[in-house]
Length: 370
Image (cartoon, rainbow, N blue to C red; front, side, top):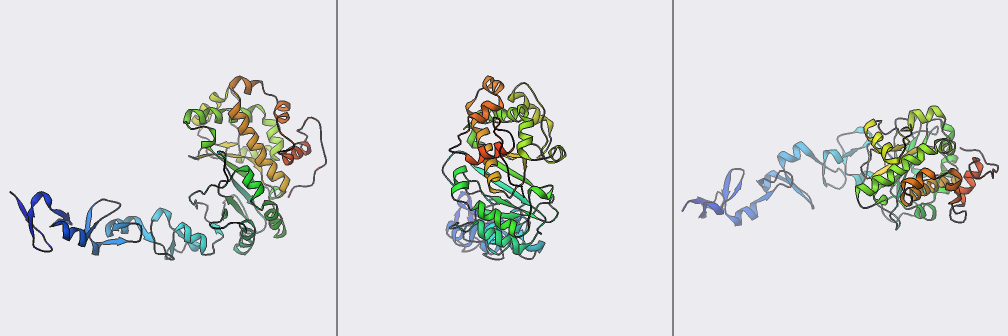
């Protein structure tokens, strides 16, 4: 019988019962007391060569190559999830602490784990771009204080920098149901705060109002999801002029920031064309995100009715895409589509459609956009 001698205590044991740490054999008791398994590489190391926090432990080799510690809470974090204040790499922060150290405008790459608000399968994440008021931390704190005033724990909205903006930033939300956006979030008060701080969105030139919709809302399988997404792309091509009017974008802005894919006879054909086109994220419906699709066609706004009408339109388009078959989509007219909209449930959308002369010849006067 082959045996080994424990490097630490000198006990003799059977060779197959040895625990190996850094090429040294140990008995079970010494291995349990003196070593640990690295969560990343799976190798056993002496505790002196481990780095640990309350949740994980890694060897010093892995730590030096792939990890750092949060300057605020001490948690071990992958380098890819570390955030820094003003690119000061001496002080890394985990995502949670970075939110809490008073940094209101995060880098464009910032992407916290989504938190879902409301109770429905269809969630909307909003990105509202504003400009002309400054990429100003003090102003951003004021806006976010208004927007997150009803948040009990983590903030629902946060700020991000965006290279397309000359002197502004974007307010981004965690995914919320349409009802939650309207009933629980102080959007009207927030938009007024933006205006009081001299920000503009519609009148700033490049600003957009982007709406992410969770792919899971379109079905449990990828096949069901793609069928509905194909219908959405078909809807955009079939009613391009109406949607262009609704969006308040110019043709030049559309080509630059939210280009169309091109008309085909069915949604399935447009979707296949979109996949092969490799047109990037600057498409009317951006298909690149893994868990969402992004409606990018809409121009930014600080007018509450227009803002809410935009979310409601996206909701109506998704409902049609889910409930209609291919033949029904092909026979659908714009008057048929707007006739489906309940004025009692979505009065903001009906009002905006009338303002834009898109609602069965019932135009009404409209206030100016901001």
